[in-house]
Image 1 (tube, helix red, strand yellow):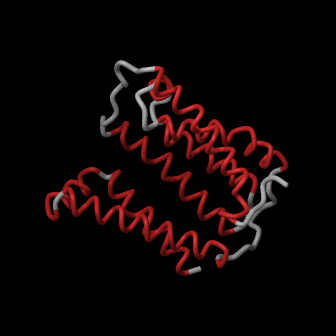
Image 2 (tube, rainbow, N blue to C red; image 1 turned 30 degrees about the vertical axis):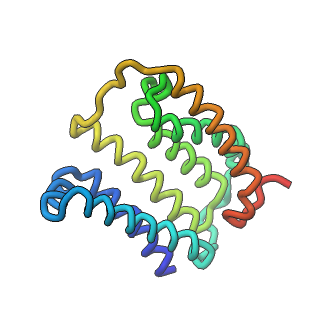
Length: 185
């Protein structure tokens, strides 16, 4: 469990530091923008790697009984979640309508997975993503770092929607291989 928790810390601490702009800016002033980005990337990659390798070593004790609607919510809302995450990278109307589409998508993903799972490892993982995805846009709003997207383009949505749906289909098909939990079949 220690390496699993270390992975969560390696992933989320640099992201939280990035959210706290005064702290991030002082670090960047000391080491430079490129070294900061390289360190953030390296720590995030190391964190994700440890999370993936040691997720199944974390306690599987149930904290609560998974909700009966949790699995249905996953099937229904994961396409929406993935479309939102993808749309964060394009200047489309989805991104204009949803101020923080990546965070919104991760919140949907997290809540659905928390409802469908009740074990300690899942709660730590999805709960961490949920907390960060709520805090990050909140802090950005409070710091005044969010501007309304000007001149959206439908091309972004025409890319986001099919890519999100294809990604959803791929995750459904390969979920057992990637994460050890069969979704279909």
